[in-house]
Image 1 (cartoon, rainbow, N blue to C red):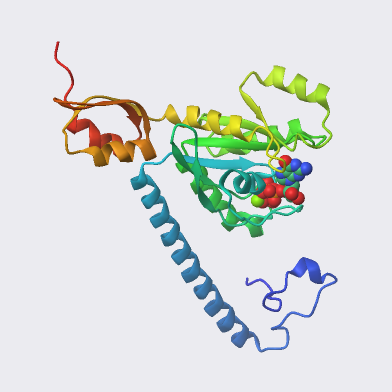
Image 2 (image 1 turned 120 degrees about the horizontal axis):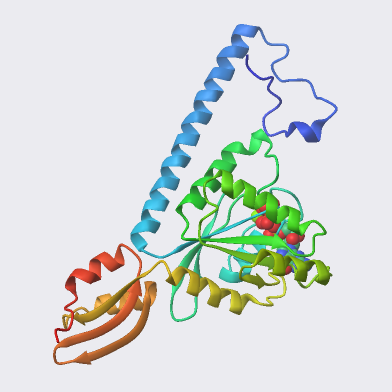
Length: 290
Ligand SMILES: Nc1nc2c(ncn2[C@@H]2O[C@H](COP(=O)(O)OP(=O)(O)OP(=O)(O)O)[C@@H](O)[C@H]2O)c(=O)[nH]1
Ligand SMILES: [Mg+2]
């Protein structure tokens, strides 16, 4: 059974009480043919979007930069935080589901580290099914991320319930055990300090308190992200051949460099990097023999 179609571009809820369906007057065979054609077109479009996203994810993997995904209840301030951290200009609004398409931006971290920061569709307790397709992209982003930044609205009187709801969705996605950092946002607004303190004691994990609007706590948040993403990286220690300063430059940009010394034997390197940069450098390293 095909659904009734309403005029293109109209969101039916805005048109309530119901407007007249476009195809109401058309003969049923014509209606079916048109609907089938439209479904085929939409499926083709969706397939193209999927292919494009797959390519983007592939590129990200190759770049070896850690991927950080912003997750959280709708309206928690994820997109505002993405904008504040990266200087992006993603659409934000005081409404549910302002974001329907994940956006990724480069994030500059302390110690010359870089990461990719991805926005996602907000979670809620029960997802309306016209949003399931948009949400699928979020699931893919969550699955690929090295670190999840769980953003919560600390000024909301039900912030603890919202955090719980998001954690339950993450559990359903099998992402509960992922490396996650809880970010309590909107601390510039009046908050229930007692409830917040109680929550922090009961949740027993590292929490960052920030205001994406005023910038409070963002530098500390970047340091925490750097530390968390660094854990994903494997250590490199040894002598690189003389000519490979290109790899040193790459490690400065995409990994963490602890020590570099240029000597007669080559370039002494102590660093950390994620795959595939680690795989590119490690075979070239000569480890010291005692
Ligand atoms: N006062 C205050 N308002 C904020 C802060 N961060 C975000 N907001 C506001 O909260 C509202 C929601 O922000 P968004 O960034 O769109 O929230 P989101 O989590 O991306 O929402 P969805 O995309 O719908 O899931 C907007 O009106 C923002 O201006 C903050 O730190 N302080
Ligand atoms: Mg958003």
